Length: 116
Image 1 (cartoon, one colour):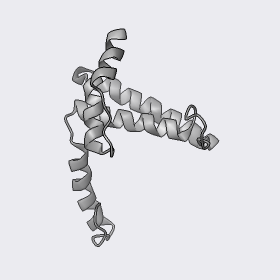
Image 2 (spheres, helix red, strand yellow):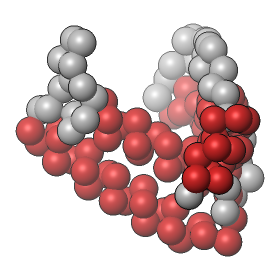
Image 3 (cartoon, helix red, strand yellow):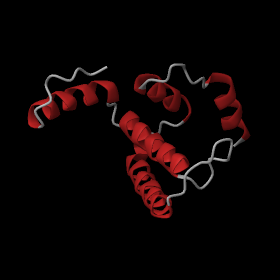
């Protein structure tokens, strides 16, 4: 475990501004095990359950407070596992989102709204 923590500190740098692409690259540096696709999916489902619980409680992070046990924490965990799952399937989330958004623009009649 110490080796993994050292590697994370040395090579994992989160870019600013944060993009889906930079988040994918960041997570892939220290958490990328394509042979564990099912595990990533199950962790995503676990985090979704935790998110449902804090939403039910309306547990929000207070200004200057801890993120622990809040919607903000669990939504971040869900995002993490979505990104990790996309990585093990070699899916570019920015491209996928743009392609799906084009379909949704037609479906929901919002072609006039530009992305970005």
